[in-house]
Amino acid sequence: MMASIEEIKKLREETGISLMECRKALEKSGDDIEKARDILRTWGKEVAKKKGAERTAGQGLIESYIHPNKKIGVLLSIRCESDFVAMSDNFKNLSHEICLQVAASNPMFVRREDISAEVLEKEKEIYKEQMKDSGKSQQILEQITEGKLRKYEEQNCLLLQPWIKEPDKKVEDLVNEYISKIGEKIVIEKFTRYEL
Image 1 (cartoon, one colour):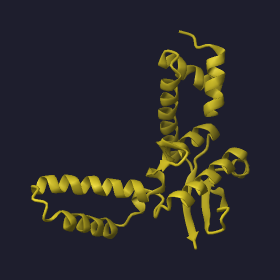
Image 2 (cartoon, one colour):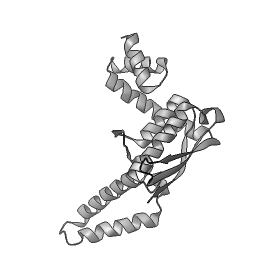
Image 3 (cartoon, one colour):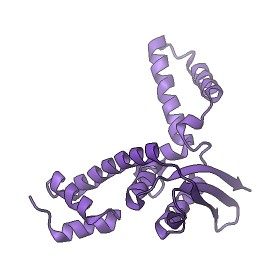
Image 4 (cartoon, one colour):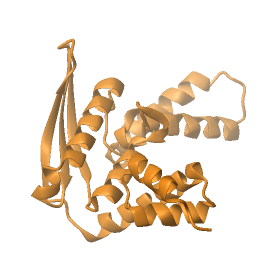
């Protein structure tokens, strides 16, 4: 089945992904725009994995954001492969969106791997202490603890957080969409959030 030009254009405008990729996604989804978006998101993750394995991000920028109330500020170090991309509107837009996310959600880490084993162990002990008198079996307590640790990671790791503008999408998905749009590896290096 051939997707209509209007549908292809609409999907292209929404995602910023090439017309050819939008056409392929629409054809694969049977002209269902929602399914096509999901397909493009999946393809974006695959592209991001390939880009991450093959290339280094040696360029980038420092983005800043000061909340209008002048009480919250964010500095973000974000990298890409070329200075051309670093100065592009797409890259600057992504950088700004990430700063807004950090300002609003106050994460402690960029990614799951940044959490030390000591921090995870401390959290695990806190959860076990909270539930010690619950009367539940050890196996159930372990499952609850693992679930709470996953929740802790999702709340405190920037890339695992729901994106503030589209909560059904994680920040990592947003970054992957930009990787597939821009065609270069993008790495959020670090951030600092200030609050009075």
